[in-house]
Image (cartoon, rainbow, N blue to C red; front, side, top):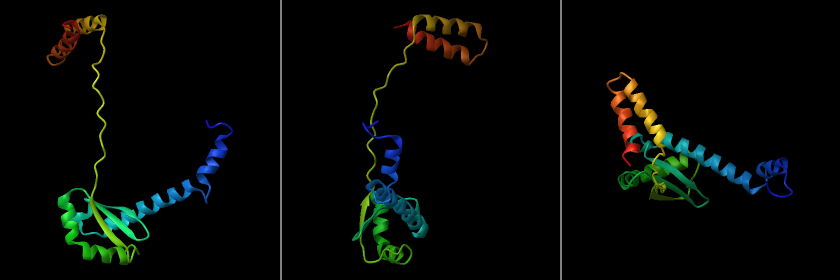
Length: 149
């Protein structure tokens, strides 16, 4: 915890109506609501492949899943402008279109599960005691992975 701040003080900081976090939370909530309304009014083929990414004073940004959907969106832009103005009350804003950037996936190094020799022997004994045509060979393969290293 931050020195000198109690849980109550931090909560007050987060919920302070004039505070930056409160304004950010309100902006996020507004964008989520506008995006939901936007998706309800765009033509059906676009609905699941575009999203309202940003609403600023002078600009609205719409993202498409791919360049193919962006092209389709571009053809619909005159109708989209009307929808933004009429349905979402966002008139007079420049409309910026872009392909949605995919989040970078962090590759985690694969770790081999650790199995002791004793555990491998126990699995092998269990395999021999089980009378199941599918499970027995699977357990034997698992045990051999450790025993053949």
